[in-house]
Length: 239
Image (cartoon, rainbow, N blue to C red):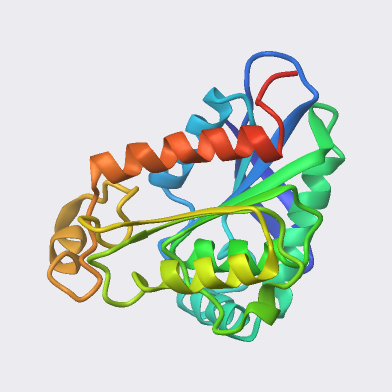
């Protein structure tokens, strides 16, 4: 896995780039992190995508806007408003990937989790993307906010009392818009069910309304669905 610094509207953004060993050009995926930023968990997810044959770019959205708490606030503001520098930065990341010789510029997607799931969905409605994967993130109240969205795959935890109902809303939106999609709610899973967080934070979070916790069955089924959906809409991860 390579370290990268990518010029974006707000400065030089740190990122991790994972690439398949076989030569390209290949489809690529931008991996948008949870509220914790670019950490080992997100790097592992990028590495897993590379193993499927995709060039995976995992940026640190919090690396260009000052202290991390301020970065989080500004990114959340962009998520709520659906506009702002975060989307300009994501487009810069997409363009950076598209210009690389190992990437097929016509086959770029996005995959986001939690905070990143909401951003992925909104970015997919404005970016030149072939597919979007949005997991347990915020869903707009109105279908019009994602009217131009590309094909979407999504997953939610049924035990998550904050974001869990988003699956039903997103299903309605995408059906009304006639957008190809695969939306699944896992009744036994909570929030962040695809991430095996460690330490005290994971234990405390699991007691709250979001029921944060890794669910191996839901996580592996989600990865299976992602691989199938991306192969259909981005092309398989082969040259």
